[in-house]
Length: 253
Image 1 (cartoon, helix red, strand yellow):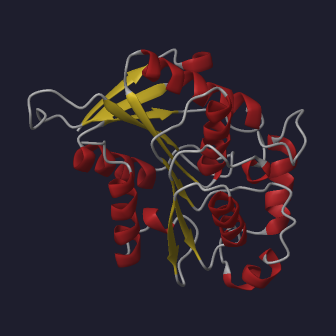
Image 2: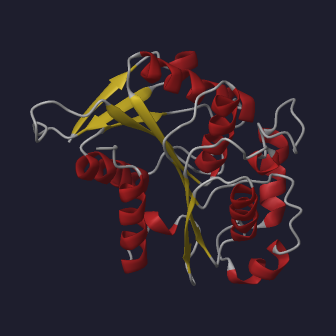
């Protein structure tokens, strides 16, 4: 696997390009790329498990995967992160590349927010893949209370605190911060992966319903008994979920 680091990227961020080191099967690598936005609760940097998944996506889809390292709290905000990802995607589109977008957890929030804004600008991405996305930073879904006793990882109090910081000057129900409040019509296909032992699962169900009502294609994958970002975990279910993500991001033939 080849990894190149470029600086500055959008807004001066570090950006990594990950691609297979072996020659492409037909001599030239696809002009399709994947932008992957990592999670971490807006406070944690990219983790080894993210790099493992990113390398798998690059290897199995034979694409370059672009990884922005966006500013975290207390320096980053929802709007700044979204706009930086959009700038990165615009650059790739300007080079004639087809762009697919993926993100997990906090990165899912940024990814869907970016997808919505690009749609408003007339750009429909061919794929947006969301793993355990944070969708509604108001944390008001009553079903969260039902799931909370079974989630050993995430909790509403901490989520609400981080949301207040991450929103910057925007309201919590602004789609920049909480993309679940955006209009879904006109989006390209969505792939959603969510575990039933994740407090973010109820909002994933809401997204599925709203996207369906807006005639958006949704590939829905719910892991029974699975935790937050389970595709990153070294389990059989995690491996299967990672494979699903890879398949959703393959370039068109």
